[in-house]
Image (tube, rainbow, N blue to C red; front, side, top):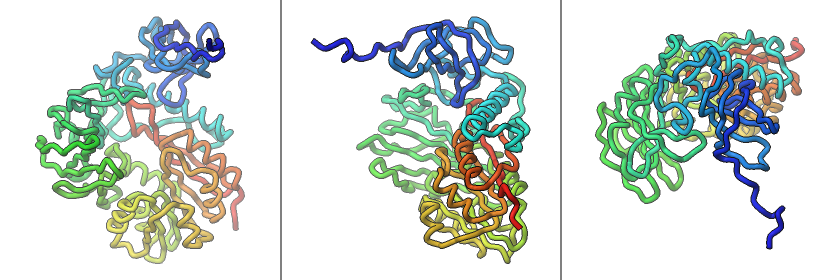
Length: 445
Protein backbone atom coordinates (compact mmCIF):
# COMPACT_ATOMS: atom_id res chain seq x y z
CA UNK A 1 0.00 0.00 0.00
CA UNK A 2 1.43 3.46 -0.84
CA UNK A 3 1.96 5.86 2.02
CA UNK A 4 -0.26 8.96 2.13
CA UNK A 5 2.85 11.06 1.47
CA UNK A 6 3.30 9.21 -1.84
CA UNK A 7 -0.13 10.24 -3.12
CA UNK A 8 -0.38 12.90 -5.79
CA UNK A 9 -1.43 16.33 -4.49
CA UNK A 10 -5.14 17.04 -4.81
CA UNK A 11 -6.00 19.15 -7.85
CA UNK A 12 -7.88 22.37 -7.14
CA UNK A 13 -8.91 22.97 -10.77
CA UNK A 14 -12.57 23.93 -10.85
CA UNK A 15 -12.67 25.11 -7.22
CA UNK A 16 -14.30 28.51 -6.74
CA UNK A 17 -13.38 31.21 -4.22
CA UNK A 18 -14.95 34.58 -3.47
CA UNK A 19 -12.02 36.99 -3.21
CA UNK A 20 -11.14 40.65 -2.94
CA UNK A 21 -8.85 41.48 -5.86
CA UNK A 22 -5.55 43.19 -5.11
CA UNK A 23 -2.95 44.84 -7.35
CA UNK A 24 -2.25 44.11 -11.00
CA UNK A 25 0.65 41.75 -11.73
CA UNK A 26 2.92 41.30 -14.73
CA UNK A 27 1.24 38.96 -17.22
CA UNK A 28 -2.33 40.23 -17.60
CA UNK A 29 -3.78 39.20 -14.25
CA UNK A 30 -4.31 40.54 -10.74
CA UNK A 31 -3.36 39.11 -7.35
CA UNK A 32 -5.87 37.86 -4.79
CA UNK A 33 -5.78 35.62 -1.72
CA UNK A 34 -8.25 33.07 -0.47
CA UNK A 35 -9.41 33.02 3.14
CA UNK A 36 -6.84 30.26 3.69
CA UNK A 37 -4.07 32.50 2.37
CA UNK A 38 -3.59 30.84 -1.01
CA UNK A 39 -2.30 33.24 -3.70
CA UNK A 40 -4.42 33.47 -6.85
CA UNK A 41 -3.37 35.02 -10.16
CA UNK A 42 -6.78 36.00 -11.51
CA UNK A 43 -7.55 36.97 -15.11
CA UNK A 44 -10.57 38.94 -16.37
CA UNK A 45 -10.71 41.15 -13.28
CA UNK A 46 -9.47 44.51 -11.98
CA UNK A 47 -7.89 45.76 -8.75
CA UNK A 48 -10.49 46.49 -6.08
CA UNK A 49 -13.15 44.14 -7.39
CA UNK A 50 -14.87 41.34 -5.52
CA UNK A 51 -15.22 38.29 -7.75
CA UNK A 52 -15.88 34.58 -7.83
CA UNK A 53 -12.58 33.12 -9.03
CA UNK A 54 -12.51 29.65 -10.57
CA UNK A 55 -9.17 27.82 -10.45
CA UNK A 56 -7.74 26.89 -13.86
CA UNK A 57 -4.31 25.61 -12.76
CA UNK A 58 -2.85 24.35 -9.51
CA UNK A 59 -3.14 21.85 -6.68
CA UNK A 60 -2.81 21.76 -2.90
CA UNK A 61 1.00 21.85 -3.13
CA UNK A 62 1.22 24.75 -5.61
CA UNK A 63 2.89 27.99 -4.49
CA UNK A 64 0.11 29.85 -6.27
CA UNK A 65 -3.01 29.11 -8.29
CA UNK A 66 -4.19 30.50 -11.61
CA UNK A 67 -7.84 31.41 -11.91
CA UNK A 68 -10.48 33.20 -13.98
CA UNK A 69 -13.02 35.67 -12.61
CA UNK A 70 -16.21 33.88 -13.65
CA UNK A 71 -18.61 36.20 -11.82
CA UNK A 72 -18.22 39.84 -10.79
CA UNK A 73 -19.72 40.50 -7.35
CA UNK A 74 -18.55 44.12 -7.08
CA UNK A 75 -17.22 45.79 -10.24
CA UNK A 76 -14.48 48.43 -10.48
CA UNK A 77 -15.34 51.79 -12.02
CA UNK A 78 -12.97 51.12 -14.93
CA UNK A 79 -14.76 47.93 -16.00
CA UNK A 80 -16.69 47.93 -19.29
CA UNK A 81 -18.50 45.26 -21.28
CA UNK A 82 -15.81 43.53 -23.37
CA UNK A 83 -16.32 44.63 -27.01
CA UNK A 84 -15.02 41.31 -28.32
CA UNK A 85 -17.41 38.34 -27.92
CA UNK A 86 -14.41 36.00 -27.81
CA UNK A 87 -13.00 37.64 -24.69
CA UNK A 88 -13.62 36.03 -21.32
CA UNK A 89 -12.94 32.93 -19.22
CA UNK A 90 -12.17 29.88 -21.34
CA UNK A 91 -12.18 31.81 -24.60
CA UNK A 92 -9.50 33.45 -26.76
CA UNK A 93 -6.27 34.16 -24.87
CA UNK A 94 -5.01 36.93 -27.15
CA UNK A 95 -6.33 39.97 -25.25
CA UNK A 96 -6.03 40.53 -21.50
CA UNK A 97 -7.82 43.85 -21.01
CA UNK A 98 -10.86 43.91 -23.31
CA UNK A 99 -12.99 44.50 -20.18
CA UNK A 100 -11.03 47.63 -19.16
CA UNK A 101 -11.38 51.25 -20.26
CA UNK A 102 -8.46 52.26 -22.54
CA UNK A 103 -7.04 54.85 -20.15
CA UNK A 104 -7.18 52.36 -17.29
CA UNK A 105 -5.36 49.78 -19.42
CA UNK A 106 -2.46 52.19 -19.72
CA UNK A 107 -2.52 52.94 -16.00
CA UNK A 108 -2.36 49.20 -15.25
CA UNK A 109 0.62 48.83 -17.55
CA UNK A 110 2.29 51.76 -15.82
CA UNK A 111 1.75 50.11 -12.43
CA UNK A 112 3.36 46.92 -13.71
CA UNK A 113 6.39 48.81 -15.04
CA UNK A 114 6.79 50.66 -11.74
CA UNK A 115 6.52 47.44 -9.73
CA UNK A 116 9.10 45.64 -11.89
CA UNK A 117 11.52 48.58 -11.72
CA UNK A 118 11.21 48.70 -7.93
CA UNK A 119 11.39 44.96 -7.30
CA UNK A 120 14.06 43.96 -9.84
CA UNK A 121 16.15 47.11 -10.29
CA UNK A 122 15.57 48.99 -7.04
CA UNK A 123 14.49 52.06 -9.02
CA UNK A 124 11.62 54.45 -8.42
CA UNK A 125 10.01 56.05 -11.49
CA UNK A 126 11.84 59.28 -10.64
CA UNK A 127 15.20 57.50 -10.44
CA UNK A 128 14.52 55.95 -13.85
CA UNK A 129 13.67 59.34 -15.36
CA UNK A 130 10.11 58.24 -16.06
CA UNK A 131 7.00 60.35 -15.51
CA UNK A 132 4.85 57.25 -14.92
CA UNK A 133 2.75 57.55 -18.07
CA UNK A 134 2.22 55.01 -20.84
CA UNK A 135 1.67 56.85 -24.11
CA UNK A 136 -0.90 55.60 -26.64
CA UNK A 137 0.21 55.17 -30.23
CA UNK A 138 -1.05 57.79 -32.71
CA UNK A 139 -4.65 57.04 -33.64
CA UNK A 140 -5.21 54.57 -30.78
CA UNK A 141 -6.81 56.97 -28.29
CA UNK A 142 -10.38 55.74 -28.77
CA UNK A 143 -13.48 55.90 -26.54
CA UNK A 144 -14.28 53.01 -24.22
CA UNK A 145 -15.91 50.18 -26.14
CA UNK A 146 -13.99 50.83 -29.36
CA UNK A 147 -11.06 48.61 -30.27
CA UNK A 148 -8.09 49.80 -32.37
CA UNK A 149 -7.38 47.46 -35.28
CA UNK A 150 -3.61 47.52 -34.99
CA UNK A 151 -2.12 44.05 -35.32
CA UNK A 152 -0.45 43.78 -38.74
CA UNK A 153 0.74 40.20 -38.12
CA UNK A 154 -1.62 37.56 -36.77
CA UNK A 155 -0.75 33.90 -36.35
CA UNK A 156 -3.87 31.76 -36.49
CA UNK A 157 -3.89 28.25 -35.07
CA UNK A 158 -5.75 25.61 -37.05
CA UNK A 159 -7.98 23.05 -35.33
CA UNK A 160 -8.40 19.40 -36.29
CA UNK A 161 -11.20 20.28 -38.70
CA UNK A 162 -9.09 22.83 -40.58
CA UNK A 163 -10.73 25.95 -39.12
CA UNK A 164 -8.56 28.96 -38.24
CA UNK A 165 -8.73 30.43 -34.77
CA UNK A 166 -6.72 31.76 -31.85
CA UNK A 167 -5.40 29.79 -28.90
CA UNK A 168 -7.03 29.93 -25.52
CA UNK A 169 -4.96 31.23 -22.63
CA UNK A 170 -2.10 28.84 -21.70
CA UNK A 171 -3.63 26.15 -23.89
CA UNK A 172 -3.22 24.43 -27.26
CA UNK A 173 -7.00 24.46 -27.67
CA UNK A 174 -8.21 26.59 -30.58
CA UNK A 175 -11.01 29.15 -30.28
CA UNK A 176 -12.58 29.54 -33.72
CA UNK A 177 -12.91 33.13 -34.86
CA UNK A 178 -14.95 34.89 -37.52
CA UNK A 179 -13.06 38.17 -37.04
CA UNK A 180 -10.25 39.30 -34.75
CA UNK A 181 -11.04 42.83 -33.59
CA UNK A 182 -7.41 43.88 -33.08
CA UNK A 183 -6.30 42.60 -36.52
CA UNK A 184 -5.29 45.40 -38.88
CA UNK A 185 -7.60 45.95 -41.89
CA UNK A 186 -5.00 44.47 -44.24
CA UNK A 187 -4.99 41.23 -42.26
CA UNK A 188 -8.76 41.03 -42.05
CA UNK A 189 -9.07 41.62 -45.81
CA UNK A 190 -7.16 38.39 -46.47
CA UNK A 191 -10.13 36.40 -45.19
CA UNK A 192 -8.12 33.71 -43.43
CA UNK A 193 -11.03 32.94 -41.07
CA UNK A 194 -13.46 32.37 -43.97
CA UNK A 195 -11.85 29.28 -45.46
CA UNK A 196 -10.60 25.91 -44.26
CA UNK A 197 -6.92 25.00 -43.91
CA UNK A 198 -6.68 21.19 -44.00
CA UNK A 199 -3.41 19.58 -42.86
CA UNK A 200 -2.03 22.87 -41.48
CA UNK A 201 -0.93 23.66 -37.93
CA UNK A 202 -0.78 27.47 -38.25
CA UNK A 203 -1.44 30.26 -40.73
CA UNK A 204 0.32 33.60 -40.18
CA UNK A 205 -1.21 36.57 -42.00
CA UNK A 206 0.97 39.62 -42.65
CA UNK A 207 -0.13 43.04 -43.93
CA UNK A 208 2.89 45.29 -44.39
CA UNK A 209 2.78 48.92 -43.28
CA UNK A 210 3.53 51.49 -45.97
CA UNK A 211 3.08 49.05 -48.85
CA UNK A 212 0.28 46.87 -50.16
CA UNK A 213 2.31 43.69 -49.63
CA UNK A 214 0.30 40.82 -48.18
CA UNK A 215 1.70 37.45 -47.18
CA UNK A 216 0.67 34.21 -45.53
CA UNK A 217 3.14 31.85 -43.86
CA UNK A 218 1.87 28.27 -43.70
CA UNK A 219 3.09 25.62 -41.25
CA UNK A 220 1.87 22.11 -42.18
CA UNK A 221 1.16 19.44 -39.61
CA UNK A 222 3.75 16.61 -39.62
CA UNK A 223 3.34 14.87 -42.95
CA UNK A 224 0.73 17.39 -44.10
CA UNK A 225 0.46 18.85 -47.58
CA UNK A 226 -0.01 22.48 -48.54
CA UNK A 227 -3.54 23.41 -49.63
CA UNK A 228 -4.17 25.54 -52.69
CA UNK A 229 -4.28 29.10 -51.36
CA UNK A 230 -7.11 31.25 -52.68
CA UNK A 231 -7.61 34.38 -50.59
CA UNK A 232 -9.57 37.58 -51.02
CA UNK A 233 -6.51 39.66 -51.94
CA UNK A 234 -3.29 39.13 -53.93
CA UNK A 235 -0.87 37.48 -51.57
CA UNK A 236 2.53 35.81 -51.49
CA UNK A 237 2.82 32.42 -49.80
CA UNK A 238 5.65 30.97 -47.71
CA UNK A 239 5.96 27.51 -46.21
CA UNK A 240 7.62 26.58 -42.92
CA UNK A 241 9.43 23.24 -42.97
CA UNK A 242 8.12 21.45 -39.89
CA UNK A 243 11.38 19.49 -39.56
CA UNK A 244 13.83 22.36 -39.08
CA UNK A 245 11.75 25.55 -39.10
CA UNK A 246 13.28 26.84 -42.34
CA UNK A 247 11.03 29.03 -44.50
CA UNK A 248 10.57 28.54 -48.25
CA UNK A 249 8.80 30.58 -50.91
CA UNK A 250 5.80 28.90 -52.54
CA UNK A 251 4.76 31.74 -54.83
CA UNK A 252 5.01 35.52 -54.94
CA UNK A 253 7.73 37.52 -53.19
CA UNK A 254 9.71 35.91 -50.40
CA UNK A 255 9.49 39.19 -48.47
CA UNK A 256 7.26 42.12 -47.63
CA UNK A 257 8.25 45.78 -47.74
CA UNK A 258 7.87 47.82 -44.58
CA UNK A 259 8.33 51.57 -44.22
CA UNK A 260 9.79 53.58 -41.33
CA UNK A 261 11.82 56.77 -40.77
CA UNK A 262 11.66 57.59 -44.48
CA UNK A 263 13.22 54.30 -45.57
CA UNK A 264 11.85 51.06 -47.03
CA UNK A 265 12.88 47.79 -45.40
CA UNK A 266 12.70 44.32 -46.88
CA UNK A 267 11.55 41.73 -44.32
CA UNK A 268 11.93 38.19 -45.62
CA UNK A 269 10.80 34.76 -44.54
CA UNK A 270 8.09 35.98 -42.21
CA UNK A 271 10.84 37.66 -40.16
CA UNK A 272 10.43 40.08 -37.26
CA UNK A 273 8.94 43.54 -37.67
CA UNK A 274 6.97 45.53 -35.12
CA UNK A 275 3.29 44.52 -35.32
CA UNK A 276 1.72 47.93 -34.64
CA UNK A 277 1.69 50.13 -37.77
CA UNK A 278 3.03 53.12 -35.80
CA UNK A 279 5.54 51.18 -33.69
CA UNK A 280 8.64 51.39 -35.89
CA UNK A 281 8.42 55.16 -36.36
CA UNK A 282 7.51 55.71 -32.70
CA UNK A 283 10.49 53.70 -31.45
CA UNK A 284 12.98 55.18 -33.91
CA UNK A 285 11.95 58.67 -32.83
CA UNK A 286 12.31 57.82 -29.14
CA UNK A 287 15.71 56.19 -29.65
CA UNK A 288 17.09 59.04 -31.76
CA UNK A 289 15.81 61.67 -29.32
CA UNK A 290 17.53 59.80 -26.51
CA UNK A 291 20.84 59.08 -28.21
CA UNK A 292 21.17 62.41 -30.06
CA UNK A 293 23.70 61.03 -32.61
CA UNK A 294 26.44 63.41 -33.70
CA UNK A 295 28.25 63.63 -37.00
CA UNK A 296 31.24 61.31 -37.14
CA UNK A 297 30.25 59.08 -34.22
CA UNK A 298 30.47 55.30 -34.10
CA UNK A 299 27.54 53.15 -33.04
CA UNK A 300 26.44 49.57 -32.44
CA UNK A 301 22.97 48.26 -33.29
CA UNK A 302 22.61 44.96 -31.42
CA UNK A 303 19.91 42.39 -32.21
CA UNK A 304 19.51 44.64 -35.25
CA UNK A 305 16.93 42.62 -37.17
CA UNK A 306 16.55 43.99 -40.70
CA UNK A 307 18.43 47.20 -39.83
CA UNK A 308 15.78 49.63 -38.55
CA UNK A 309 17.89 51.45 -35.94
CA UNK A 310 21.18 51.00 -37.83
CA UNK A 311 19.68 52.83 -40.80
CA UNK A 312 18.34 55.64 -38.63
CA UNK A 313 21.65 56.14 -36.83
CA UNK A 314 23.68 55.96 -40.05
CA UNK A 315 21.61 58.74 -41.60
CA UNK A 316 22.44 60.94 -38.61
CA UNK A 317 26.16 60.24 -38.01
CA UNK A 318 26.95 61.09 -41.62
CA UNK A 319 29.63 59.82 -43.97
CA UNK A 320 32.39 60.14 -41.37
CA UNK A 321 30.50 57.97 -38.90
CA UNK A 322 30.28 54.18 -38.71
CA UNK A 323 27.62 51.71 -37.58
CA UNK A 324 27.97 48.01 -36.87
CA UNK A 325 24.80 45.91 -36.75
CA UNK A 326 24.80 42.44 -35.19
CA UNK A 327 21.98 39.95 -35.80
CA UNK A 328 21.74 36.23 -34.96
CA UNK A 329 19.20 35.41 -37.70
CA UNK A 330 21.01 34.76 -40.98
CA UNK A 331 17.99 35.78 -43.07
CA UNK A 332 17.47 39.02 -41.13
CA UNK A 333 21.17 39.88 -41.42
CA UNK A 334 20.97 39.38 -45.19
CA UNK A 335 17.91 41.63 -45.31
CA UNK A 336 19.71 44.28 -43.25
CA UNK A 337 22.64 44.30 -45.68
CA UNK A 338 20.22 44.68 -48.57
CA UNK A 339 18.23 47.42 -46.85
CA UNK A 340 21.31 49.48 -45.97
CA UNK A 341 23.42 48.89 -49.06
CA UNK A 342 23.23 52.60 -49.94
CA UNK A 343 24.98 53.41 -46.64
CA UNK A 344 28.60 52.18 -46.95
CA UNK A 345 29.29 53.32 -43.38
CA UNK A 346 27.09 50.48 -42.12
CA UNK A 347 28.40 46.94 -41.65
CA UNK A 348 26.17 44.05 -40.62
CA UNK A 349 27.55 40.90 -38.99
CA UNK A 350 25.69 37.64 -38.49
CA UNK A 351 26.10 35.93 -35.12
CA UNK A 352 25.49 36.22 -31.39
CA UNK A 353 26.22 39.62 -29.89
CA UNK A 354 29.02 38.67 -27.48
CA UNK A 355 30.69 36.35 -29.98
CA UNK A 356 30.73 38.96 -32.75
CA UNK A 357 31.96 41.71 -30.44
CA UNK A 358 34.78 39.45 -29.29
CA UNK A 359 35.61 38.47 -32.86
CA UNK A 360 35.68 42.07 -34.10
CA UNK A 361 37.75 43.17 -31.07
CA UNK A 362 35.75 46.33 -30.56
CA UNK A 363 36.87 48.02 -27.35
CA UNK A 364 34.90 51.28 -27.47
CA UNK A 365 32.07 53.05 -29.25
CA UNK A 366 30.09 56.27 -28.89
CA UNK A 367 26.53 54.90 -29.02
CA UNK A 368 24.76 51.59 -28.51
CA UNK A 369 21.18 50.60 -29.25
CA UNK A 370 19.95 47.15 -28.26
CA UNK A 371 16.56 45.60 -28.88
CA UNK A 372 16.96 42.12 -27.37
CA UNK A 373 14.42 39.29 -27.43
CA UNK A 374 11.82 39.01 -24.68
CA UNK A 375 14.23 37.32 -22.25
CA UNK A 376 16.49 40.38 -22.28
CA UNK A 377 20.23 40.75 -22.86
CA UNK A 378 21.49 39.13 -19.66
CA UNK A 379 24.27 39.91 -17.20
CA UNK A 380 27.27 38.87 -19.31
CA UNK A 381 26.16 40.83 -22.38
CA UNK A 382 25.38 43.92 -20.29
CA UNK A 383 28.81 43.79 -18.65
CA UNK A 384 30.44 43.52 -22.06
CA UNK A 385 28.49 46.50 -23.38
CA UNK A 386 29.27 48.60 -20.32
CA UNK A 387 32.99 48.00 -20.92
CA UNK A 388 32.75 49.78 -24.31
CA UNK A 389 32.40 53.23 -22.69
CA UNK A 390 29.49 54.44 -24.83
CA UNK A 391 28.36 57.95 -23.99
CA UNK A 392 24.73 56.82 -24.36
CA UNK A 393 22.90 53.51 -24.66
CA UNK A 394 19.31 53.03 -25.86
CA UNK A 395 17.58 49.88 -24.60
CA UNK A 396 14.33 48.93 -26.39
CA UNK A 397 12.30 46.41 -24.38
CA UNK A 398 9.05 44.54 -24.91
CA UNK A 399 9.12 43.01 -21.40
CA UNK A 400 9.36 45.23 -18.30
CA UNK A 401 10.74 42.40 -16.13
CA UNK A 402 13.64 41.70 -18.50
CA UNK A 403 14.25 45.44 -18.83
CA UNK A 404 14.38 45.91 -15.06
CA UNK A 405 16.80 43.01 -14.59
CA UNK A 406 19.13 44.37 -17.26
CA UNK A 407 18.93 47.93 -15.89
CA UNK A 408 20.12 46.49 -12.57
CA UNK A 409 23.10 44.90 -14.33
CA UNK A 410 23.88 48.20 -16.05
CA UNK A 411 23.78 49.96 -12.67
CA UNK A 412 26.26 47.44 -11.29
CA UNK A 413 28.48 48.12 -14.31
CA UNK A 414 28.59 51.89 -13.96
CA UNK A 415 25.59 53.13 -15.96
CA UNK A 416 22.50 54.96 -14.78
CA UNK A 417 19.10 55.31 -16.39
CA UNK A 418 18.76 58.85 -17.73
CA UNK A 419 15.20 58.59 -19.10
CA UNK A 420 12.55 55.95 -19.62
CA UNK A 421 9.51 56.17 -21.89
CA UNK A 422 6.67 53.67 -22.20
CA UNK A 423 4.41 53.18 -25.22
CA UNK A 424 1.11 51.31 -25.47
CA UNK A 425 1.87 49.59 -28.77
CA UNK A 426 -0.21 46.49 -27.91
CA UNK A 427 -3.67 47.80 -26.92
CA UNK A 428 -6.07 45.35 -25.22
CA UNK A 429 -3.13 43.15 -24.15
CA UNK A 430 -0.81 43.32 -21.13
CA UNK A 431 2.22 43.94 -23.36
CA UNK A 432 4.00 47.29 -23.39
CA UNK A 433 7.10 48.68 -25.11
CA UNK A 434 9.73 50.74 -23.28
CA UNK A 435 12.75 52.77 -24.35
CA UNK A 436 15.38 53.42 -21.69
CA UNK A 437 18.29 55.78 -22.28
CA UNK A 438 21.40 55.13 -20.19
CA UNK A 439 24.59 57.06 -19.64
CA UNK A 440 27.70 56.63 -17.47
CA UNK A 441 26.91 57.24 -13.81
CA UNK A 442 29.97 59.45 -13.68
CA UNK A 443 30.39 61.55 -16.80
CA UNK A 444 33.70 60.76 -18.47
CA UNK A 445 35.83 63.57 -19.79
